Amino acid sequence: MNRTEMMERIALLKKERNAVILAHNYQPGEVQDAADILGDSLELSRKAAATEASVIVFCGVHFMAETAAILAPRKYVLLPEPGAGCPMSDMITADQLRTWKARYPGRPVVCYVNTSAEVKAESDVCCTSSNAVRVVESLKEAEVLFVPDKNLAAFIARTSRKKIIPWDGYCFVHHLIYADDVHRARREHPEAEIWAHPECRPQVIDLSDKALSTGQMVAEARATTRREVVLATEAGMTYRLAKENPGKSFIPIKAAALCVNMKKTTLAKVLSALENLETRITVPDEIADRARTAIEKMIRI
Image (cartoon, rainbow, N blue to C red; front, side):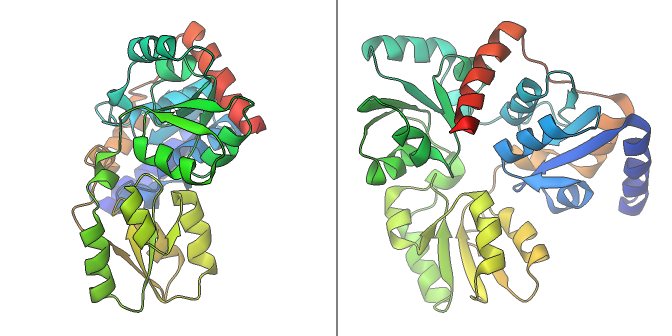
């Protein structure tokens, strides 16, 4: 099938299956074009929980589909590419977290949503890059354990009154953006603003004009009067922003800032997922119930 034929077949199957397609902002352009809803991982999971659809095709990576399955346990959640993982999520296991917690009794664990269901189940509360400071500040304890992203932890520590004890994890895409990349972007695009994701190194955030989550970038792109913006985040973010904001130019800070796992999903795999109802993502009840508590506590905050 060509692209047009696949899009038509996907539209037909969505009606037959009572399905909805969710795609993360870092997904390939063709997958974003097929999606009903675009967003960050938690935004998409919340939309999944609220949808009337019976089948959810989650175009992202494994932990995202898990989160959707936790929040929408009666839905049929499909991950078109079951091999799409997250290296940062893999940097901590539930066993490692239990051992680490034992070294710091009495300290609550704030868990970035970019983690497995098992790690969420061992945590007190989840957070996203957009609400991390607010979540940490809501806790009564003076010291907080934060997993797994040390760069996001450093970002929180700048404005929080709490002592943040970070796990030594990171997003390899954002961690491989350096201060030199920002300096080069300034030289090449002197009229542009530079927006950095909070998962970036502290030096990169210092040199950028704004630190924004992907969801905040979407809102800021609509509001800004700048005609040119350099994005210090995964390069796929430029596709959505350019499509939604004609007349404005969005430039990746480096073309190599690509999440290979996000790019594993293709239009053909979305079609196959709908045709075969595979691969379904489920979470055991005993894990899902505990993980859901941490997620819902964040949502209440």
